[in-house]
Amino acid sequence: MNSSNPVFSRWNATRGTAPADFGMRHPVGSAADARPGSHPLTNPYAPAQDAEPGLDVRAGRAAMTLDDVVVRTATTLGTVALAAVLSWLLLPVDEADIGRSYGIAVGAALVAFVLSMIQAFKRTPSPALILGYSAFEGVFLGVLSSVTSTYIAPGVVVQAVLGTFAVAAGMLVAYRLRWIRVTRRFAGVVGAGATGFLLLLVADSLFSAFGAGHGLGFHSGGLGIVFGLVGVLLGACFLALNFKQVEDAVAFGAPREEAWLAAFGLTMTLVWIYLEVLQVLTILNSDA
Image 1 (cartoon, rainbow, N blue to C red):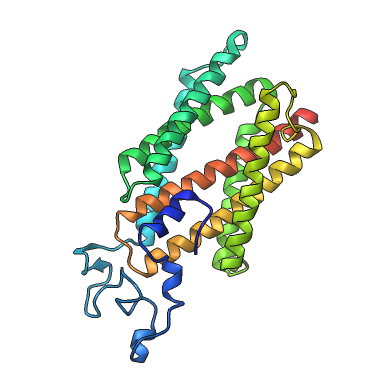
Image 2: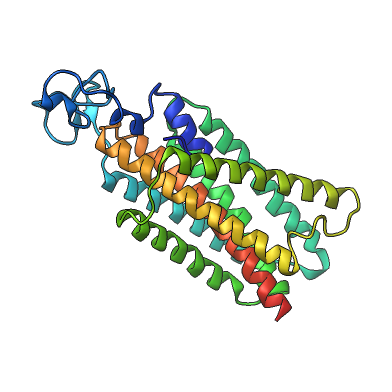
C-alpha cells in the first residue's frame, strides 16, 4: 500500500515489496505458510518459526513494535513542540519589523524541508536528521503561530492544536474500528487529491508572487475555508495511510530502527493537519 507521504513511499520502495503486499501473495505449501508473515519468500521481515517474539532473527536484530513507534513519535512531536515554544518565547514578533519574523519562519521551513528530503532518500533512518527536521519545523511553527496569534487571530493557536489532536484521535478510532478501509483505490484517490491540492497551492503562490494580490484567494474568505477543510481532510486520509503502513510493518517484523521512519512520517502528516486547521480557524476568527 503506497502512501502519499514521501517518507512512507520511500519506505516501501527501498524494500522492494510493500508490507501490505505480503498478505496478497498466493500461499505457498502448507496452511501454516498461508498465515501472514510466516513465509520468508513472501515477507522479507519474517522471523524463523522458532524465533522469540520481537526478534528479527534473520537480520540478527530486534523487530519494530507499536510501542517503539509511539515512543519515537512522542520524541519527534515533543521536539517540535519544544522548539515551537522556545521560538515563541525567544524570538518575539516585532510589529515594526514583522518581515524579519516571517524571514526566520521561512528560513527554518527551508532547512526543515532540506533535512526531510535528505532523510526521504536515505536507505536507513537517521535519528539526527529526523530530530533536526523536527527542531527546525518547530521554529517555523512557533514563529508563524506567534505572528498569527499576536496580530491576526488571538487565541487561535490553542484551538488549532486541539483541533489537530481531535482529527488525529478521530482518525485513529475510525481506523481501529475499520470504519475506514485502506485499499489501493483509497490510496490512489488520496494521492490524486493531494497532487491536485499541491498544484493549486503552487499556482496560488505564483499568482501572488507576480502581483495578483491574494493569489487565487485560497487563504481568505469562503474559498479559503473550503480549501483549508479539503487540506484537513487530505491530512486525515494521510493518517489512515500512515496507520496502515505502521500496522503492516509491525505485523511483518520490520527492524526496530524503522520506528524512527514511522515517527517521521506521522510527524510530517500532523504538521500538515495543524497548518490547515490553523488556516481555517484564522479565517473564521478574522472574519468574525
